[in-house]
Structures are given as structure tokens and as C-alpha cells.
Length: 565
Image (tube, rainbow, N blue to C red; front, side, top):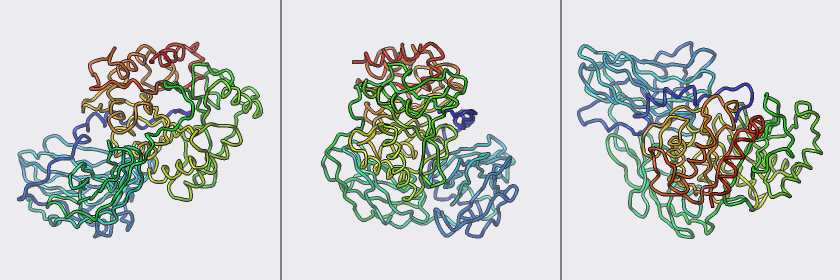
């Protein structure tokens, strides 16, 4: 959600998403037996030997590492994106597979000088190691290419490890071919819901991927060291094992771990209506209509107060009512208005983050601080729960810990909503999606922001551009097929053209998308394979921009949501 001034990375990178779609949708095939790794020092075990990094932006570190004892750390600064390059000898008219493991901030992997089409791929910020891979073909006279990694301007440092360029021997030497990795250790059940079990294990040196087995049958492949197995029966015990893989083959299976699903089919939310509308209320004046909570349109079932503020204590938040900017709105009036909305059957939550939010939950201490501080705000102001709108990345492990701790304090009536960007929900391996699945039994609704985005993948693997019914339905389908209950999925759109930099659609488009998902009617070219009559509803930024436009959005979408049945 926007805090002024507006700045969005997902929209700025939309062209890269589209150009790199093939790389994002699947890893390239494994190298043939005759192929060799033509990159040198791809594990950075010899420091930065064979590598050149811009403006002194690269260094080697001993932690985190994917394999061996070292990895590259690239730190963007100012107008430098921390690019590190290596010239690699290749053969003309040959095909090569470029791959590397990356972690941290926005990270890119690519190659130039191929003599044909130069390629690249990228990943948004990631709390765990993620493999990127792409292929390229050399031209008729190409004997050398330049491979590179880099971050993104103004973003967090990135880490790279185990980079390789597999293909015909270019004659320049390179790192040795991999051997079959060892079996993973430390397999544990990190969390369970009524329909899923989340697993984690230790990194295996030299592995490029992992296979997850349920009762001896392979059920999932992943490039990270965690996975969530879904579509399980409630109150049932399951046995899992994991293997490690690379180009040389697959390891033996790990020691088994047993997870038992919970009895509850889950979902937090207290006494919400079956179909609900969420609206963000601005605790600042940015040109939209200035409102008191009491003036928020009655169509809104959940009012998210934007935003809490970070404190000097890691993970802790506070709330400061902008009385001066809101025409003298007092804290006592604010509290009384919350009580009045609750008496009318509405829920009011405190939103954490926003476009410029800086709250970081990165360890157990900050997770505890977060839970304690949010619960304190609930007691002070009467909030019904919390909205997670962290748009600069989150740690799934510790955010899960924080929200479960908050749930233990607040009880079953706690409202938990989330508002990820489109890039955050493209895959269940993304940390936002992982967090939503981890807390599925206490999660109320995920209202993804279908704006300020650009083109993204739908659940059918096709690319859709924002601003259409297909964009809303095909992307919502990813969440619906990825493990969230229909009652935990909502469509987030701006209330007017002033509410977002891009992605505004008319209320009619929103209503058509709701009908398509819930009833299978009014679809565009994409039609989901199933209907989801329990779809939760819709969200907008913001109630203030809605009021500025005469409440046109909530009058149309709100009444449509509540009439879904």
C-alpha cells in the first residue's frame, strides 16, 4: 500500500519479468555427460579470483554459503548495482546452461557476448538459497562470453554461490564436474495445518535441488531447503523423506520425519461475513478525502488502519495518530469510532508496513517483540488484529513465529490479513506465500495487490497484463491451487485512478472477476478449472480515495461481494 512518495519495484521490473518468463517457469535441463563446467571459481573458494566486481562492490563471505566454505556478497550502492563478471571460454555454435544459487536482495544472473541472443533471469529478495538457471547458444565465431551477477539499485546485498556454465569444453579450464551429493540431514516438521505439513532440512554441499517423498513416493521437487506438502487429510500422520540432486544424480533418502495434520480446517477471522470487503484507511493526508473512522463507508467489513510505525526496538511497532494531518482527530475520538464500527459488526485491524515500511522480523527476538507490540496496540486501541503489508520482503520462519505468538495471546477471534504484491505470490516457494500457508489455520484473508505490477504469470503458465479480468482471475488461481482456502483469497484493487500508479480497473471488471472465480460466469479468455463459491471478496486502497470518488468503488463492488451468496 502506498505511503507517499510512491515507489514500486514490481512495476519497474515488469519488463524484466516478461522477458525472463521462460527462465522463471522452469529450470533448464541437466547437462549431458560430455559437458563440462567452463566457469572458474564458481564457488568463490579462491576469493574473487577470476571475478571482477564494479566499484569494489563484491567480497567473499563465510556465511551464508550454499556449498563449500565461501560465497559472493554483492552490495549495491548509489548508482552501482554490484555487478560481478567473469570471461568464460566457450565453443562456437554450442549450447550452454548457466546456473547459480542466489539469496538476499533482488539478484540477477545473465550472460553477454554470446554472438546470438544474450539472456538473463532474476529473482526478488529471498531469505533462502534459490537456484536460477538459463541457457544460451553461442554464435559461429564466439569463443568467449561474459557471465555476470548483479543486484538492484538501492536494494539489500545479494549472495551468489556455486555458479556454473555447463556445455562443451571451451578450452579455458573450469571447475570440476559435480559428484552425487550426500543424503540431506536435519529433516524436521516446521509446522502443520489441517491439510498441509511444512518441512525443512539442512543444505547439502553440491546439491542443486531436492526431492520430497511421502511414504516412499516422490511428491515434490524444490531448489530450496524447505517445502510444504498440501492436499492432506486432517488429523492424519504422514512420513516424509528428502533426497538431494545435482547433474551427477540423486542421493540416498534422508532419515524419515513424521508430521500429523491438525484437526481444524482453519481460518481465523471471528464473526466475519462469508463474503467481505476490506478497505485501507489512511492515517495521513495525501490529497485524498481526509476521514475519521466513523466516516468510512458501511460496505467495508474490515478496515485496515494504515500504518503502524517501526520503533528502535527490532521488530516492535507503535501507532501514532496523525491528529494534525487529520483535522484535529483525537485519540479518544479514534478509539470511540473503532468501538462504534465494531458494534456495527465491522473489524478494525492495524496494518504493518506499506510501501515505505521498514519493520524487519528476522530472528526470534524480533518476532517476540513484534507479537508483544502488536498485542499491546490491540489492547490500547481496540484493534481486532493485524494486516501484514511488508513490501520489502519478509522472513517466513520468523514472521510465522511472530503471528503464531500473537494468535496465542489474542485467541481465536484474531483477524490476520495480508496484502502481498503480485510478485510475492507467483510461487509457493516465495516467502510471502510460505508464510500464508504456514499460518493457514489462523489466517483470515490474503488480499493480493493487483496493481503497480505489470505483467505476471497465471496458474496456466501464460503471461497476463494488469488491467483485465484475466489478470485478476489467472493470478488468483495460483493462490487457490497453491493451498489457500477460497475463503482466504480476496482481490485487491485501487479505488480510483489516483489510488495507484497503474492497474486501476473499473468496478465492473472487479465484479466480473469475482463472478468468474465464484460462479464461472463473466470470465475473459481465462476460465478456472473449478469455481470457488466461498471466495472471500475484495479489498481496495483506500477508503479515502473511494470517498474522493463518491464511494463509487464500494457502492458497486461492496454490494456485489455481499450478494455473492
